[in-house]
Length: 114
Image (cartoon, one colour):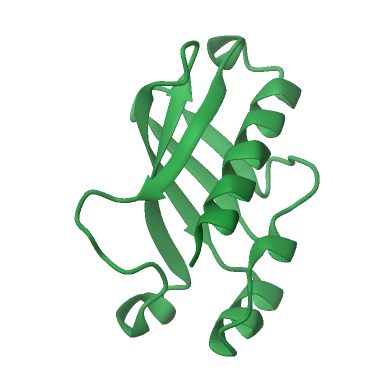
């Protein structure tokens, strides 16, 4: 995982937030994506089985609210991850209910990679 992947996630989340019709996220944007505060290594051997990683996203009207970002690996992303390839190209181009959701109550964003 490098900063370019986190930057791509940041832009993706902002784009998806702008495209959703949910009134509770109107005006939201993302100002950054970081590894979660536990210091866990994204997609290490321990979480390859779950095909999931937890990150932290700075989201809100001011871009500074702390949200838990759950990223799930689709088939293509899992294959690329197994070969230690960049996952940036697996970030979806458009938001759908199947690949992007925001829960403002629990401050959680879910994103499913291709």
